[in-house]
Length: 525
Image (cartoon, rainbow, N blue to C red):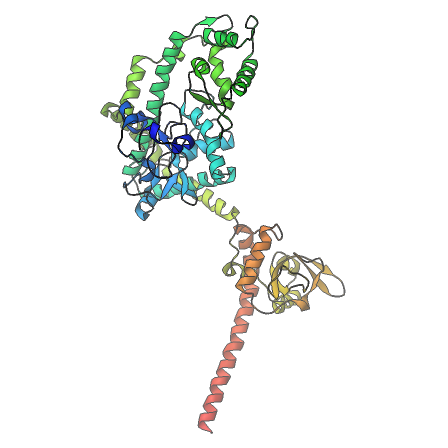
């Protein structure tokens, strides 16, 4: 159940870092079937006795973070989850990416910075991914495993970040009390209960991590002593494995020595090849039970005298700073009041600019929609589709017929030797005109130019539209953007509408003649 000694195979394949803070240590694995997430007791508001607790425990990943019902959608990188009901999905700061997994706003913000290789968030605040004592550093080591296990791409992360930005804008427009989106402005006030709960939960994570890392840093600073160019712990370790420490070694050289030592001692994880499980000697130097191979250089930097910081003020927290962080972690009223006051001032300042900001955002949304790819469906294509009779009419009446025809779509008979083509006809895009004895059309997917007399005068089918989309995905013809489709439809609207009216008039006249003929038969049988 809960004890590590009885988890058997599940313990061997479970994650070896906390799902909340991403750090290692003594962890409790979730008892839900198939769940491999592990947690520090303090990260789930429990004491150390929680590690030996016999009772069944299921982590928050399996319950909705808003209504506590069974979750349907879960965050890739933290225990945030949503049940799937319309009310919770509308209120949650969550976007779905694949199947039943997605990102909460906190995780997509950090993941977007990693994928874009930026070091500042939307507010311009610096994010230090190289500081081993920060949550962002732990997240960076955890992120490659998430990408590999879930086959995530940079494009999917970027698309999820854009979806989160749009969702925050929608939530802001529906409620006057809701704040600006968390991704673009994390400093504004959140009015809904869900956003307040999310913010307090995320700050608890960070504050716990900050307190623990600060205390660990203070203790390590007091204990660490240097012997020449490196710490005594590092010098003793290198000497014990037969390395000459009389001459100064660089960080890269020491990192290479320890990597080779790990290979000799077979310390690499059997499944996660970049994960190193420390033995007693290595754990004494690095202060960790395991570490990622890529982070070894950063872990060794504190053992070099040249990297020793000059001022204790930069490393140690004062009692006042520590008390303030503890107050945040435990939701003290003093911190809440101070924060509320600051947010009220910011809200008053930004209210004046709200109308201008909203109009700018609407312009950005319009621009984004116009540059997106248009849906290749019959309802859209009918606005840029030309029948053979209409093409002939345009050639006779319009002076700029080449401009009108180029970019439009026509219907021609499929090549008999094309075994991939299942339809008798197919839709092609006109790419240009060739003037010979008669005017020929250059079309996509055809080497030979097509005479106008070979164009179909019938409507295209839905299967032909699906076949066009399949060919577009292969690269030819190219996919249409919303702006390109709109411009071409506007230029052809008058000609297509005129032909449609003439066609409807002919049909109406035929029906009138049929009705008159029936009347004559009744009157004169």
